[in-house]
Length: 122
Length: 122
DNA sequence: TGATCATATGCCGATATCGGCATATGATGG
DNA sequence: CCATCATATGCCGATATCGGCATATGATCA
Image 1: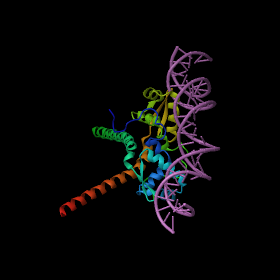
Image 2: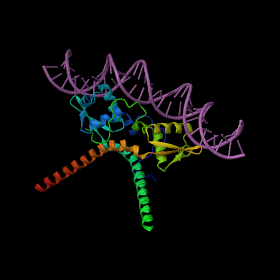
Image 3: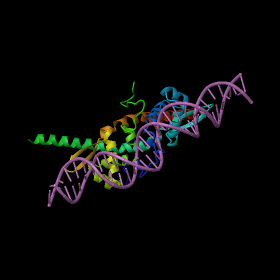
Image 4: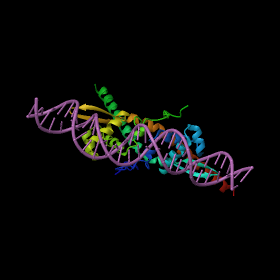
């Protein structure tokens, strides 16, 4: 039984179309970071990051394919919005390791208490 | 000024040598998952995941280059261990988005209270 | 309709990646 | 020293990726 909602997708992740792959690129992460500030048109991202517009559009496409962003038309602009909920696979995956860390810290805690008890007995 | 310890590495991440890139590969993630169980020799990973040994070694190399795993020699085996501390960039980066999520929930809360007030006034 | 702004798409070349296979390195035991 | 186990490395081919540039699409306004 799975520890969390993390699926543990088996074989090939078919390159893109995978959240992990999408955030594997630094520029895409920066685009997401910019979108934390809220819905923005492509041009704003271009200005903020000084990345050529075609590249921004392409990265937005990848991000949109995995659902990390959505877009809507507003006049002749296209507004992109962060879909933070789609970070869930990443979050769940990471959560497994948090548990390991806590468990490990607990064990250290137990160990320290053990040392303490031994000290008292001498 | 940075929101968290997340560095926000600027330009090219030079492919590998980037933690996010390292976990972009599903097989590498599975290797890390296996190592949650503790230090293991390469052979154990090979058995657990049914991935050819050379590939496992290569992926371990990538993971080790970014510090996500470390290894030590034990007889003629080489034991690999997960370095949970290196998961910090993930934590820090994700933390930004947790705030967005909470903020959004707060806003929903506000909205519900607003509805409530309006209902009372009628 | 034509000009312009905003964005998307297509093509290119360089480079990287990944899997598969063979083989090298390294340690151990007889 | 040789055989063997455990792991790493090298080479290959197929494919993907990314940036850069030009250009197409699409909407708005005069």
